[in-house]
Length: 218
Length: 90
Image (cartoon, rainbow over all chains, first blue to last red; front, side, top):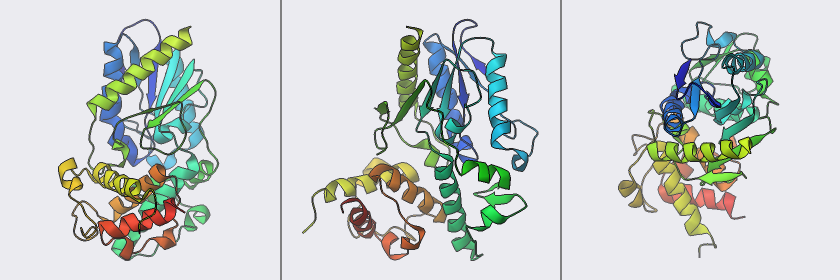
């Protein structure tokens, strides 16, 4: 687990999006956590089961395993914890004991499934290999979607998975149509094929998180 | 005649191509109706198309069905804008 900032006070623990978007947003997330450290707020970035340095194969993970992993990482900090989730990371903080949840551009499991299938269909068109979207619900073995081997159980769990709305601040890009508690300017780094960073956007997120944590502390 | 809001949709499409494909702002600003896209922009491969469509949905609050996606709508900047406007402005 990467740690940032002071040894006392509240700590912000980050959950990256699932699958490919984790690679695209990791540097950005670390930039936000460093910016929070500069504002006197501690941060942590755990590797969840099958993510990052974890030895568990990607196709052996499920939503409960990921949520338990995040909850255990948050509990191990031994301090009041706030989550910072990006995109489908918002589906991972449900089981954790948190003072508050900060969801940046959250999405539902159904949205994520749709995007995975759309990307898979795009590559199927390119390679000329047919792909039947219904097969992801009937397959017994892990399915390859957008370069990831995914357990069919996880795909089923995603069907009705939604972010927890308890003590949650939802923040989106100002370009997004969906409602949010606040909208910030920045670029959707999670869409970029080549990982990129946006230091100004990260600073705006860090400012917003710092102000929100102060409000929560009352 | 273009419907009200057509220009906003056009700027949204331009912003999506810029942000998703990582095209610099000066280059994206020069896109006009006839600018060829799929097959002409090296950044726009089939995976990137999936990202462009999904980002258009997020920004315009529309839903694009997979059977609506064809080569024609991705041929030019004008065609993609007209498609997006037909979804967003009705």
